[in-house]
Image 1 (cartoon, rainbow, N blue to C red):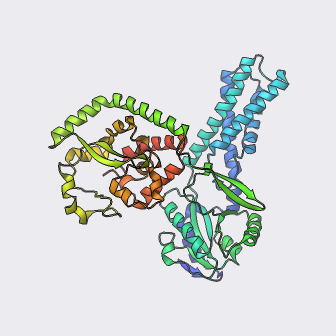
Image 2: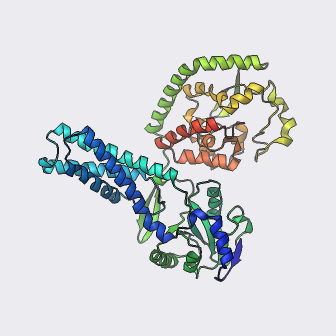
Image 3: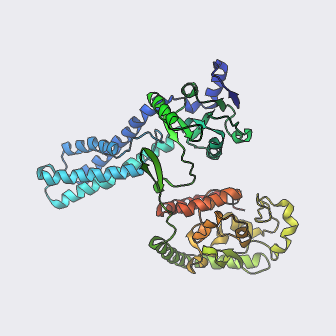
Length: 496
């Protein structure tokens, strides 16, 4: 880390060190911004060509002119729908919502053209409907698959960003930057910090970030800092030292240099679908839609959870019976273990699990207190090599088979298939008022906590993921968690 107030010449040796440290991130911001539409456009042209090939096979009535028109019109529809924007994206972004909008737009244009000039389309209404349906369905899916394939095959490029703000505003930005840096495919790479105001920045705030991160005191040379570090974007945390005049001036400078300007809202863990831009006079404000934690949608989710759990219990009944017998034969004690947990709105219930520890394990927990690996000692107990776990219990925990009896809790309406982690009463007693919000929904058999590391997570991360799920619940989020659960079970991450 380097702190400076000027802009000294960077030696060639230092520049070589920076370049070698990040060889995949050497493309200048101007080149990346210009390349994005071409990369995505090429993928969409290929998708349109595949759609045209399918149309030629399925719908022989299409003329070569109509097939060529599809290849031309599809990228235009994607462009109109915002599929090539560079804001907050990358050259390999998928943007499925924009592609779905483009499919609807292309279908509407095709149907309108057929209605106005019947000679342009198929001979019958049925053939016209099949043609429009093919465009609406196949073209977006083809673009999503090709873009996603390119995203997986491409060399990952993180956005080089300069963080700007006073000490109070920069602290949460740096915290989130460190959290993002834990991911091997992080989209953000802070390369410099411009500190506004007179308050010094706490040295601990930058621990965990890049060793070559430079801190500049003052914002007068922001444009030179951006050029020196070849930044793709500037992230600003507004505060007492940064007003509207600064933002307007920087927006003009950065636009002329093909560099994005991002302004922090100060909100964390709010899904983009809940946020909309509104105006109060000339001031832009964010409108945050309330969390969907009640109502008919959640009643439908509860009904579907209970029916799905009943079906899974029926399907897994032979496996559950075999596991119960194996647990009884492996060690002394019952097959099932029950424990008091806190459910929705603070209601207590008994959770069912296969017993994975020796009988009387709770009685010796005080003797193992010194080996507790939890960062909330006295509330949670976590131990990678817990001597109380039986031989079979270790296998059951490794593959999460010990949690299958919780399907009974789901059928009874005490739990959900997907939701926050079911908490112990001792945990809830230690909750701060804002953390109690995680009790607004039913706890889940799986959730963000399980697919993000389970026992490897800190207390803070566990609670944060639970609150993030409660505030941002959607059917799409549940589907993503369900798909990721299979990978989490197979990789055994945090399962102990």
